[in-house]
Image (cartoon, rainbow, N blue to C red):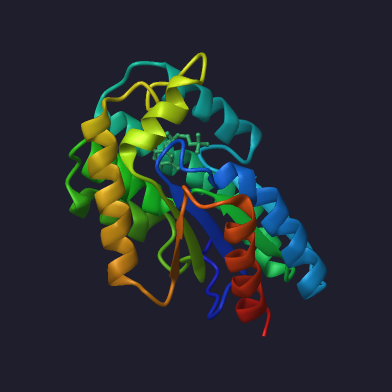
Length: 210
Ligand code: TMP
């Protein structure tokens, strides 16, 4: 696949540390975006989004592995996702709302696990040289509150079992990305009420549908 070039792709991503609350809002956001824009909305996730991607997700979330293997599997799943789902959806004019994308690799494998950013950038340039989200909703939450939420989860995966300092690094990296690209990011306080977050999401939808 030649990477499609979209000047303003209808590509929105949700990001944040585990437990920050993005999943609570994603479906509502997608439905509201569909109603407001009148366009098809494809909701998907990473790692995952295709049968192969979901199989890779089960591996990276549950099997012990080397850090570089982990990053390569994230990008392998991403590549298949771009070819089978994201690329075709954008090409037919749909919005794509994706639960995590390459910012997660920068935050988790880069800042969290210590993989050199240059390697992640090389993989990004290889796998999706011409596609970035036009909007990223970053759910921000203090790691100690995220930890409490995660502790209530049974059957934690490899990431959810990480110590708090891992999530401190992940959160810091996300906030740095948001600082670097203020036109792309909207940072939401994950400890805010559902109504308050929806209010901000609604305004954001209005601005991207113009
Ligand atoms: P989720 O629970 O939000 O679906 O995400 C699954 C986990 O995968 C989450 O802990 C973050 C992690 N992840 C990475 O480490 N790197 C990535 O590139 C992606 C997409 C997810």
